[in-house]
Image (tube, rainbow, N blue to C red; front, side, top):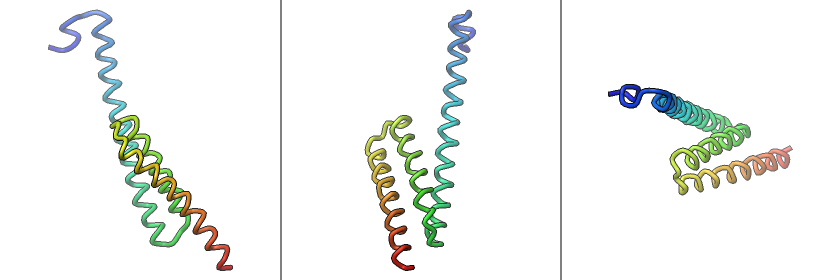
Length: 104
């Protein structure tokens, strides 16, 4: 029996709307997570090529995954890990920048 068959009326229509919204939110999380995975692979490639921009992409990826772990899965240990990654990305950016300046 569907939600519309059980209760009828406006209340059950809202249940259906909320159910559809939940599916769409789940899909958005999946899109966001797969985007973060793709960006992480790009950042790894840029690191291999010794491009400083890898740290920016990794920081964006870590921020996305930090928010996903905080608000979607409520995994606070993973959230803390990604906060650490963001801090290391910021440190890496400035360290590579400083090293580039001392080479010239």
